[in-house]
Length: 212
Image 1: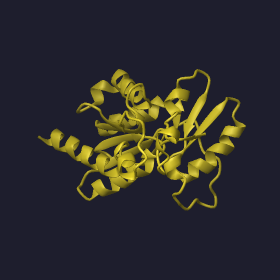
Image 2 (image 1 turned 135 degrees about the vertical axis):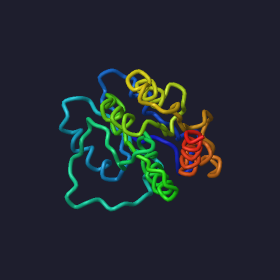
Image 3 (image 1 turned 30 degrees about the vertical axis):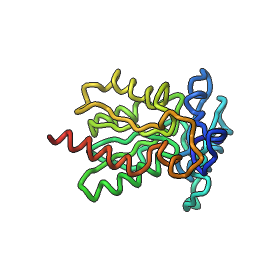
Image 4 (image 1 turned 30 degrees about the horizontal axis):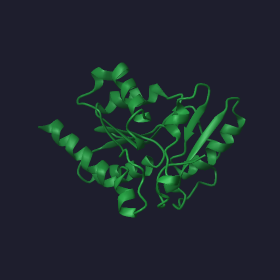
């Protein structure tokens, strides 16, 4: 299923459906955040005995990336650490993955070592990988294109507070889509969802706050 915001499709065709479907008991809901996953998740899903919904994202449809020749089916049960780090965890999925990786690369030049965790599976959520990352970095930023109310990020933050509160060195932050009908104009569309620079700016503030 196609989802997300991008390519100036305006309010009629710009929707983040994944929180809606992740709320349905019995469905396995997975999110393709990389080209390799977009290809490999389908093979695994076809072999699954469970009903599976794979979300692909409008903003990624016109991007290009090399896929290894030996790439095959990928895991649709576990989250994946896309970049290891020690200072802060970005937890994201879908179109947030490439933005988070780019932001982490930029922040590395400032001496900030960011871990990027791609949820991959939105239902059932992989608690273990999330909590391991929190225990490692002790700081968390959740990034999601969907609206912040009743969202995947809401669920992730709740689980961290329930299971890993005492691992946190500061309050969890999140960047989500602004709760408006998505505009057609490109600059307004971009402003309605988290961008790479928003991630960088938020993490710089988080790290500055932590060092005061």
